[in-house]
Image (tube, one colour):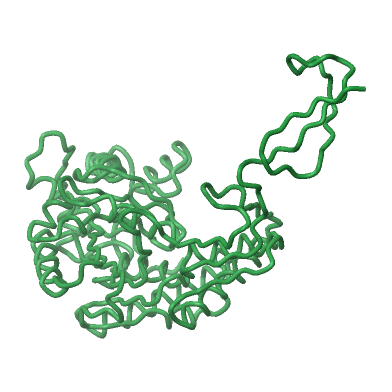
Length: 427
């Protein structure tokens, strides 16, 4: 019986029998044997047997973990410049594998999925290979230890993905209160099994408290400004920061403003390509959303991508938005809260009934007055004042005499013990 030999390459592996009807192959007489010398290309493909990964950060350690989990390689080498980095990588890999095993999630990965690799050779992978190379943020300096600043520090510390975290404020008393707040928050989250940590004190120790704006390390540093919503103090801080770090081109500067345009805050920033906005939500450890603001004619793509990666590193979800007052959430939320105040002032309903109505009728987790008390009535007033000063007809603004009077009396909400509700009374 005659045989048809189809050659695909010059170097052919052993013959592979292929079952199927010869009718489906053109110009082949049915009934003949079809022998195909199998699916090889030029040059012959040999399976990758050894892997060397240079860089033990998130990408490098992740690649090493994926390779190791398949048990298909003779050797896997993970290289970095220090034993400390490698030790952190080993811990990260161990924790990741443990979590995946507990969740019964499989890890799929194959060298075949990596494009443009010469099979049979050692595979050399350089982590973070983009143009320009994106270095993961490794050190964080947070200015302002209030609810937002301490919450950001806590979120960074809980992930254990940073070399250093520095929380700065003007007094030891403020920093002491922040430490107590972080400790209590972590303890509560651990007890409720809403966070996966072994020891609260160990997490707190990852945060350096300082009255000086001096990070532990300036390498791949992110500086987050988280002071109250006052334009001139924010502008002054960034002017001073730019002078302090003018020789370090790896520093990224961001403001955590909730309502002010970032470009106005960064008026005196001379390195606008490394300036942007990160708007966190209160309470930061629980709220998953972060608005990432790209300043027009400022924030470059490298900075923006670094901020996106930072948000992922602290286990949050980022959304991109334009640099406009209130961004997305507050542009919708502030007018809603102010309208609730108008309802109260007119006597249409009590604060409690309005809160109950919005929770049960609209499905909101908190009513508008509960939310204003939680955020701080002074913060709400700062936003209204800032928007009013802009004279922008597109902004929905209502200046409430009730709100202004409460702030003047020091009734700022939950943090002062009294706002629309009295928190000094034991339930």
